[in-house]
Image (cartoon, rainbow, N blue to C red; front, side, top):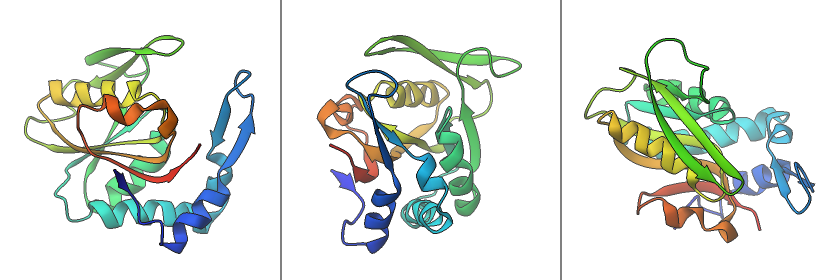
Length: 182
């Protein structure tokens, strides 16, 4: 398991800034709300810093952020490590030619798209999102990047819901998380 060092005092602070909203968006879901983390500049900066510390020397040239919350964390990480940011979007949000990857969710199907030519063969990529639950979205993101010829080095999320076993669907790809939510 690739989890941030829990002894780092920043981790505790980050975890306390994530609000849990019961029964949202439907009964039985304990929604992990990162908007409260974003309201605290120190905790938000610490979140970005922890990722940057991990990836600054890994020769990553692409940070791919999953819509929508991957767009919050991905760009500052990309800028800090000198990589480009590639948005992975929901269907019909990107102009021009795209490649698509459909995936199954626990409640239906969805799709991610990426611009053709956004990633060059051989580039080293990091996939960023706020949370991993069942792993379907991260798998689709990895598939898109790999189809374009990129090497996905790792996936990074602020939060993991380990009870949903999403990590097991990542085909052995490393997953780095800051906090677990049970």
